[in-house]
Length: 178
Picture: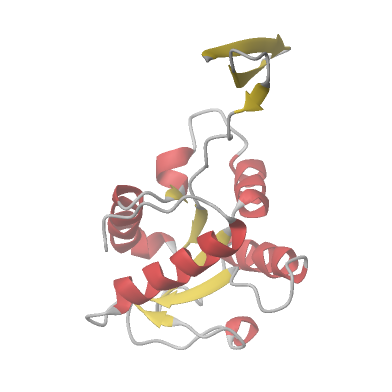
């Protein structure tokens, strides 16, 4: 058998296609590498330190977490990039706190997440309200069971939900939390 890859470029996109060719001339397409679960972290600016800690833990555990302070680069249209990240996410974790309920762009993020959730099959995990402290939950998020990240088993409960979502989407999930 011989293994070979073809790299093709179209504009600014590069595509790689790899195949295994047997001695009998039969081609066996190699499986595409699995991508990590994409998780958008919605939060209040006042909670940035706690959410940055959550981001670090998630990325260490193999999640492609999206946090504005980590993913946005100077010169980008931040509002456009946030909308794009929410639409491309497999899961949106809404980090709730006493500060979260104040007005701000995060309210638009929640509405965008709710709109995107409506496009998901019924019963799928897409929005996960995650309380950083004892606080009220937004009325618009009350239909989803939340996780209390301030509880001892809170992070593991979040990881269980993320593993379940990854399994439904047939996405790799090699977390170190297990």
